[in-house]
Image (cartoon, rainbow, N blue to C red; front, top):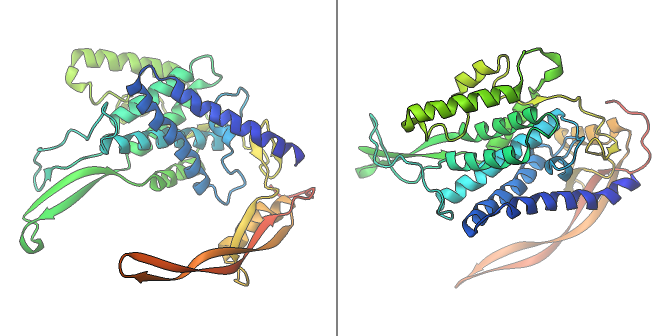
Length: 364
């Protein structure tokens, strides 16, 4: 485990270099604002990944998000990292567009349109411009010189699609006594955690490309539908807005890539043993990982016991309990006017972690 600590700084440097690269692509002050939100979205992607994989042996190491090193295995975990990065970037920029913080974009163009039983009004989340930004950035960085760029870009697209399909209609009733004589609606993204859960399901169902023979090349198909998209826009300018994601309609794309839906994640390499540290395979190992935290004396739940078994015992590590004393606010009272006064209380917490001893042979 001694090399793990030494490489933590390297991982952090790579990730910070990646974020700096996002900002440095700015050609103007306006571009810089977009790329600042793009960078913030990338960081949100790491946080969301770690929420989704909190009790998994693979815990979203920063190196998985840099995409700046050759030789990183394209595992199903790496597929998720690519997808959640694009999804979080699209989500971040979309929300800032809706909030009016970016002059390059605004609300969705739905205001005033009347449907059968409601009227579009308010500020809808519009994912088209953010999706365009995310696609352009990654396609310019992950070109044909990057090994298996086709696979990487497919997973990035799956992330963008997950955001687009999380849009839901939100409505508000108007009328006396809640009679809802009129109703106004707008489109709003579900929370990033919902998108993360959707991609986690796609991760579990990810397709190993070595196990199927679809008879196509992602890059050739991408080139083909890009050309077709341009021809269509030239013939019918009204379709330009709908084609801003530079993808064909989903049913056309599915037909272009037989056997694989654009919603699905794909991978080439089988996952390594994430119990042990392996810098090349982007595995931090589980030694030293916290598997549970509770107030001292509390009984561990089934979920907590399972986490300690998966992260520690099944990897050959012992579970070690550490008790620590923490201070928190308590007995808070509202005092007129206008303060909330609290006392400071101490309590003992028990932290359970995988003991960093040389692991014995374990089950994978």
